Amino acid sequence: MKRRVLLVVCDGLGDRPIDELSGQTPLQAASKKNLDWFADRGATGLLDLISPGIRPGSDTAHLALFGYDPFTVYTGRGPFEAAGVGMEMRPGDVALRCNFATVGEDGLLVDRRAGRIKEGTDQIARDLDGMVLEDVRVRFKEGTEHRAALMLRGDGLDPRITDGDPHDIGAPVPPVRATVPEAERTASVVNEFMARAKDVLADHPVNLDRARQDLPPANVILPRGAGRFPDIPLLGDRWGLRFAAIAGVTLIRGICRSVGMELLEVRGATGGLDTDMKAKMEAAVKALNEYDVVVVHVKAPDIAAHDGQPKLKVEVIGRIDDSLSVVRQSFKEDWILGLTADHSTPCETGDHSGDPVPLLVYGAGVRRDQTTTFDESAAAAGGWGRLRGVDLMPLLLDLANRTTKFGA
Ligand code: ZN
Ligand code: ZN
Image 1: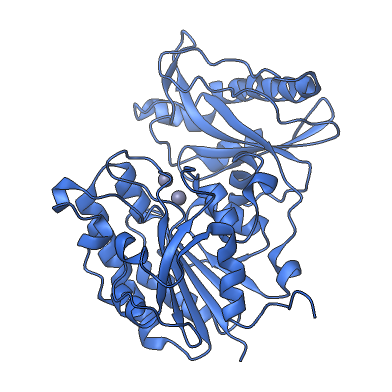
Image 2 (image 1 turned 60 degrees about the vertical axis):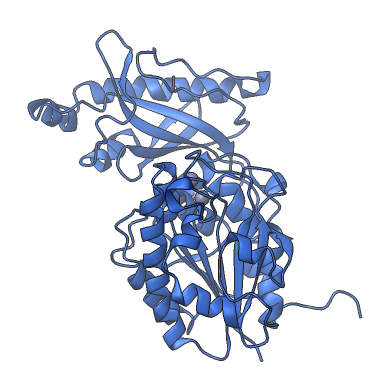
């Protein structure tokens, strides 16, 4: 029987024992009857997203989860951010992620996020989009809040340039510099863009409006994380299957788009703590009628952990578990459920760690193991043992009877 795969990625789910939770991890402390139900009837294990002890970014980890070797495919965050805001990119294009920011009259950085500007960035972006500088076509598009993406298309571009972002308040905005001679032209184009942007922003109506409301103006663009858009073999071509994704976060949307997944829009899916998880699961379940593989990304556990809030992370995991009742109740014989994380984010450090993440696989055809609960410690005794992130997609597709034989 050909099966369909639902892969749920809980961002930053893995954690470490926390005193405040009596030595439990947030996943252990959470109410999770559905996760435990699936774990009891399926099999669990541990996943090293990149390799043991390597702290993955969400981007490199997702590439691995989708079956790509991040060391060959990953070229920096910029291209995926740009794809995530909807830019059409081609292999060879260079992209950077940007912030709308505020500098004072002395030219020193006052606010890296221009007061977390929300309104008017689309108007500003329209006025900065479409320049041609030194024969390079420059595209600019706003993202969520203070974020944006800058894309360069032309001959001889090279992403090996420094950031045009001081990263620290009170510092001047540095010019972008080439770190190799081949990138001189790229650096010069980005610098020219930054200068022109500053002129456009100086008396932009959106900023005049902000001044009236006593809000910090978005009077400078800070580009960083330059990368070349990679020549990625698309998932559909590789497996001959239809892939869809539900994700609210720009970066993850960009990765999903770049590997050829169809992005499904769900009302209430924000990529924040307030995201409507049930709506996402309902949409995923529905999408399984049409697609062979559906990926659902939930950002919330990572946000709670970056903020160092174990109790919030426990609550968020409880909500994920709750939303999984949608999947459990409608589970079909020809479905395979995979649920895991893209990395651990221990509340202790407030950042990603190399700790392996728990993996759960459930469905007809899955060899049931001895584990009856889903958490980091139980998964260490699970039937899948310890796997690499890049192995997950082939493993799930094999359980779905969708892979081709190697040899005769
Ligand atoms: Zn992540
Ligand atoms: Zn994170």
